Amino acid sequence: MQKDIKIKGKIWIIIDKNNNLINDIDTDMIFHNRYLAITDINEMGKYTFDNLNGWKDFAQKAGQGDIVITGKNFGAGSSRQQAVDCFRSLGIQAILSESFGAIYKRNAINSGLPILKIKKIDLNKLHQRELLEINIKDGSTSSECLEIEPFPKVQMDIYQAGNLFEFGKQI
Image (cartoon, rainbow, N blue to C red; front, top):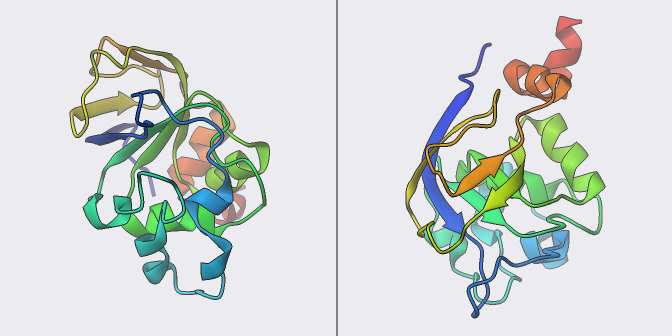
């Protein structure tokens, strides 16, 4: 299964009340531990960011194909797979961040959820729900005020296969 190297969707810029990207969003803010008994991935999405101040209604507003933009250290904390699966449940296409927690990054890559590191961003020129196109192979975007790093080869291979399990079957 070959996936397209270009993704296009409306952006959610996860900012605080001062219009700064929120840093250090941990897995408990993404998918709170009070929901860990939920095992149906289709149910997980409605609790996304339920524990993130100012973003509790994100899951009700997010749409299929949307793209999330956050600050540094996104997904820090526990190795909670639900913190990846809740975005997949909502149909979020990609997460862009200035950096990722190591375990979160590995879980997202293994699950085939595109996570992309931001090289440069100008929040004064980006707007909530703006349409953005990203070429994950070369890192180019449709916005002059956003630069991202392209996928490394192994991440691209896993993404193209669908997830790590499917990639493993190919080699």
